[in-house]
Length: 207
Image (cartoon, rainbow, N blue to C red; front, side, top):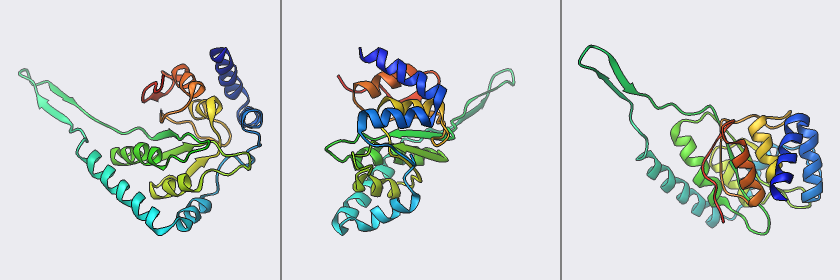
């Protein structure tokens, strides 16, 4: 049963941290992520190695997404009530946001930008991205390049429910985040549902 398996993964990662994350990644993705984090210089190199026309396309997408979400920024409200009371509403960004980017056969740089750019516009200080690597332990270079463009410096080469658990609880390598966004498979979705309340989530996407 998928829910039972997800509950087991969440508990293991909460209790055993990186050890559990590595174990599940070896079991499901057939490699051991050691280290779990992608070196920051690899992100910059991935960006430099992309074809110039692809870099131009990603940069255009970045700027268009940024411009759109700038228009969505809410304004604070501060008024004085009829009896002198202060009334209002204040918007403040979370400190750290987690982004999940699916892996597998396809690359999803659009998911990187559509999740990271709004967070940047909102003023989030730190972004942590998880994306499953292939059996050779490497994350798709287009995804890494998009992460560099979006200003993400912490990329973890892990996926599945173990990645959601790592971001929700924190491990030795993965910082605990305040909110998690991004689509995934059934196990990712069930994991996001299970950690909701400990962290914020965007939605339960998918069938």
